[in-house]
Image (cartoon, rainbow, N blue to C red; front, side, top):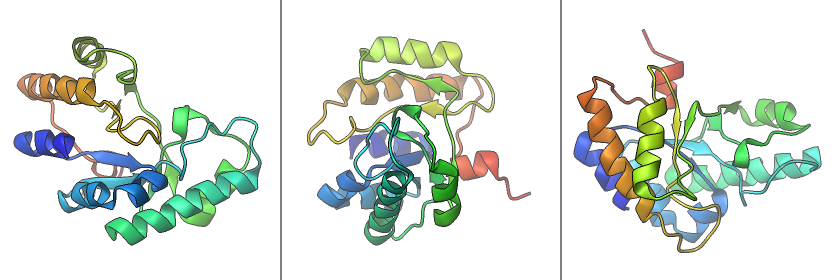
Length: 179
């Protein structure tokens, strides 16, 4: 996985929010992310927009993704990110039952629509200490998404933020420091 290679080149840890369907379709990618030491988060099973959905549908989506991610990666996610950032009635109960904590972003690259240069500029212009940057190593559940703009943007973003004195952490390290 090229994104993991870029992060590894700079010694940068990340939290990857995995879609269960994608982990089942390409388990070698999900395992490579986990094996490289990155944190795994739950991003639902099929990446639906949860607006106007039933609580039992929400629970099924995250429970199935949780089962898949544990089975494929050997890691139990503790974080979830709702697809499209949309949360609906039933989220709180689902989170409690699965032991998941929801988290959003403070900087989003809009990398599903912008070219690499614009993604990098957007992220670099908006990054502040403690922010959570959201980029995508896939496009929902597309089988072979073109993520080259994201990878190229990461190649620009990471060294520049390191040059500025920033460091990178997983969500657990950022939000739940051990000391």
